[in-house]
Image (cartoon, rainbow, N blue to C red):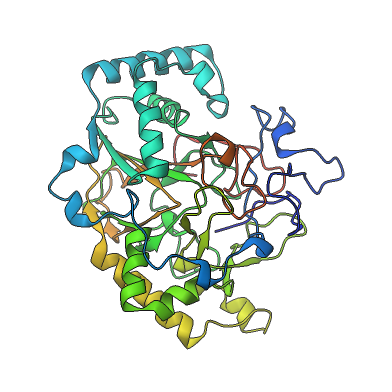
Amino acid sequence: MAPGVLVEEAQSAEPSAPAAFKHKNAYHNTDAPRDIFPDGIRTSGQHAPLYDVLKPYSEFPKEISGPTVWKRDDFVNNPERWVHPFTDEEVQELSDTADAFIASGTSLTGISQGNFPLPKLGKVLQNLRDDLLNGKGFVLFKRFPADVWGAEKNAVAYMGLGTYLGYFISQNGRGHVLGHVKDVGDDPTQLHTVRIYRTAARQFFHADDGDIVGLLCVHRAQEGGESDIVSVHNVWNTLQKEHPDVAELLTKPIWYFDRKGEVSEGQEEWIRQPIVYIENGGKGRLYCKWDPYYVKSLTRFSDKGLIPALSEEQLRAMQILEETCQRLALHMVLEVGDIQFLSNAHLLHARTAYRDFAPPAPRRHLLRLWLSTPESEGGWALPMPDSNEKKRGGIQVNNTPPKAPVDAE
């Protein structure tokens, strides 16, 4: 979790109000200067929730039903329910459109549905978008030719697919709208500065700071690096039966999340928030925002008395939440050419630690997208000040321009 900013933080503001930069040359995120943001839209970034619309535990459901509640056994032996192998025709359409985009000379940060037409595959993706947002929340594509196309074409085709699911948002303080999950040698024990996706360490169950996350496997590890996903609503139902005290604690805005230095001018180094919320309108669904690494890394502030240290009650809740997710999760292994798209609203995901092949073999490498699905376009009604912005969420530091590097940097 890290910052974004520069939407007005006033907690009494209407959630539909346009967000403005706190900047001497103020402008709205949807009217950003095109010499910095090619499409004129800036990633909103991280914000504290609208505290006055947060619901008390008494208004949370005791049990959730519907398509967002699923169990591992629903899918483990039924790949046809969640795996979509690209057909030869779909691959050809994607290839032709990617070649045309590259030939146009358009910057990768300027890619959109308008300049990346997919008449047939686009309809498939738009249908899947509804299932990602309102259904089971995940899909696994296969047969993307990642081992045939080069780095540039892989990036173009992958980002082109993403335009049919949401708007690209920045994933870090450097403005990366195309991320790279790869061990670049960072030290995973330095929790207060290191983003774990840049290491080979285990990632516990978490959600990213975008409505949808996509992962394209370009190279596999020698060992490990396998994926687990879980329905938040199934986890909630289980906690209500087994640990209702933990469920209640997760609804309280007593959890401090680190920004790991990815902070815009004038921002605090942390955000205080709950872990689970109820939508601010919409369908009134339960929404989750969680990453234990960003809660554990704040001792540099709690040791100074700037924020409370984690209580024994909170530490117990974190352990029970992780153990419950592990027990209920669906396991999968991403092969080269697989693309996993997941909802961050009602799924949590995890990754096992991994070991790369020895050089000169390539390291494990996944291309990552964070995609925004604003409330006005069918996205969840989040209790956040930027819920209606096109590029809500993400990580934005000051006016850092968007970048789409074709490899880790």
